[in-house]
Amino acid sequence: MKNLYKYISVALLVYIHLGGLLLEAPRLNILNETVRALYFHVPMWFGMVLLYSISVYYAIKFLRNPLSDFDLKSVEYANVGTAFGILGILTGMLWANYTWGSPWHGDPKQNGAAIALLVYLAYFVLRGSVDNEEQKARLSAVYNIFAFAAMIPLIFIIPRLTDSMHPGNGGNPGFNAYDLDSRMRLIFYPAVIAWFLIGVWIVSLRVRYRLLQNQLSEN
Amino acid sequence: MILTLLKKELTLELRRKSVIAGIGLYLFSLVFISYLTFSLRHNSINAATWSALFWLTILFSVVNSIAKSFIGEKKGLSIYYYSVASPQAIILSKILYNSLLAVILSLAGYLLFTVFIGNPIQDEALFITTLVLSGIGFSSSLSLISGIASKANNSNILMAVLSFPVLISILLMSIRITKNALDGIDRAASYDELLNLLAINCIATALAYLLFPYIWRS
Image (tube, rainbow over all chains, first blue to last red; front, side):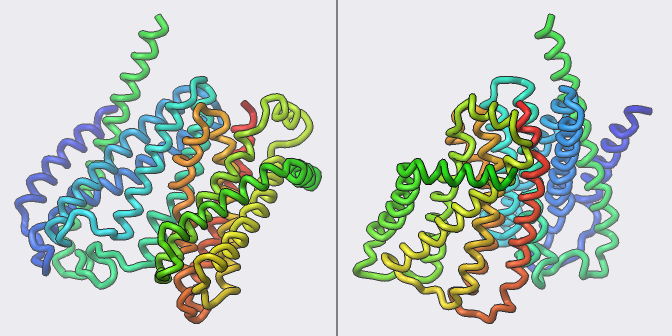
């Protein structure tokens, strides 16, 4: 029963890959078949934000009750969140190359995502430059919370103030505006859930691995 | 308590004249370098470049001057503060003092820019409000980050690395308002951005207030 979510995520991913690549997608100007990137690119961002949020949640838990387990989880969620972010940027660049004409276009969402990654790369640099384990955990937890709160205006507010070139923003065709959207949603929402569950799975493996490593180094 | 600490910061600062002179000279050098590199005596720059240069100058001088608020302090001194004052009072007094410093630096930078590079701003009241708001925002974020960086090795590099991503949202908002002030657009067009800036300031100050005790304890 404990592993139920793993079975669900694998089953959903099989469904998404088959359905996402084979089922009919709406014909939209410019987007054409690249609209299928929705199932693979957008869930990366949902996953990144969710994983970072969980990382912040554990950072808060650590500050309230300094157990090294919370710190470990906080770091690993941030790690996997960063991996999702890098994948999101790469898939987005691939997509932008075919629809916008060049991989990097200075779109506000693109820039916001790059800055979010910078924040967490700085977080890892901070962890690298403190020697004392307990102090490292405390300082990085504080920075995690602070940076996450400072990042929210960038990712959620600023792109909505300016026109983004992303589908569905600033008059660009998105999947909401069309009557075929329900068919895409049938794949999109499971995709978000599946990729997020995969992220949680990777985190749980990494946490167990790190715990074993710690035990070995103690003996 | 906050007022006493604030007064102490001010007297200490006024006593160490070389530090103030250093910050002032840093700002002046930055402005002068942009003046020379763009060889502005012969040609002028457009408004967008002016705003980018201005905000870069302000960003670097503010980061460098606020970095020293915790980084330069001696170990014994912080133990002494720890025993006499609450962490909340310390961070609030630092934020107040740094805001003052940041606002003075931004205004001085504006003055220097006017002298050397020119002043294309059309709506000065709006621009100065932006300077004050962004100064407060910079100082509340940077005070906390300076506290974090002071506990780590190679704190000066870390200060820059940690602070830039956090400051970008303030910077982007300010640049957007600056653009409106440069074009002399009706003020109602900038209210949204001003409110955003104010909200970011509130978030940063509240977080610094809540989180600082955890850094201070170590």
